[in-house]
Amino acid sequence: MPQPTTRAALIQYTSDFPATIPNLVIFQFNPEQLTRSIQIPERPTGPNAVEVTQAGDPPTETISFTARFDASDRLALDHPQVRAAGIGPELAALQQMAHPTGTLVGLLGEAVDAIGSMVSPPGESSIPIPRESYPRVLFIWGVYRVLPVVITQLSITETKFDFLLNPTQADVQMTLSVITPSRCSDDPLMIGAAAYSSSARELLAMTNIPANIAETVIDIAALVGV
Image 1 (cartoon, rainbow, N blue to C red):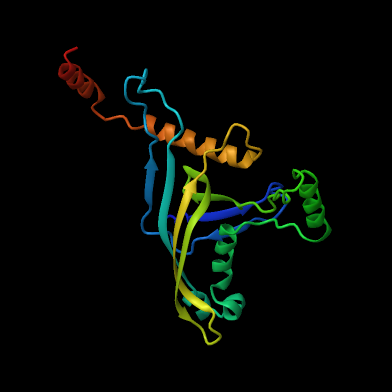
Image 2 (image 1 turned 180 degrees about the vertical axis):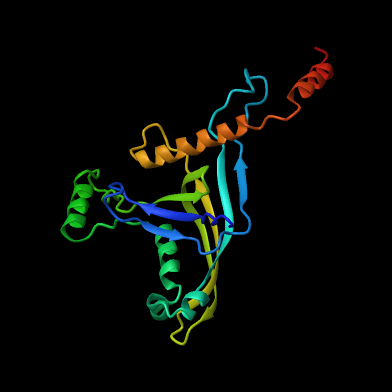
């Protein structure tokens, strides 16, 4: 009996997770390929470069892929949510992950404006107070990758619609930027996910041992003249 395929997912969570239900998108079909780009910061060069092996900023990674959503099977089963909105809920959930959240409104917003006015230098306009923050998102791809990310690019191509013009099929191109939490981060879930994925990568690297390790070491030693 074939093993069930693990499906990739994006989870948007809040600071009080798991008390609050997260915004969850499980990919209906896993993307056929991932493009991972790892940007290595420039190393010091020239006469002032004391140690060219000394690292500064950590590498940054971006992940790009295309995910497909299709309501055909669920329409055939007369799924009530799909009959009412097609794949609109999934697409809307993805868009929510790309938009800033937490806008302050009403009296609280007015209070923040008042604080900004009070701390402004005389004769100058009030200092803008940030009122929104980008969603906290985890990208889950299998057992070894649970990555804190931000969505930096989202392109939705809707290709089929029902009689109400709800989308029933779409391809979504996404680019994710993997976050490296700072030491002063207040997000324990982000820190834990980043540490877990880093440890899993190190473990996988350690298992990359050639079957003929002894012969390989001898060949390398002969090559370098040891």
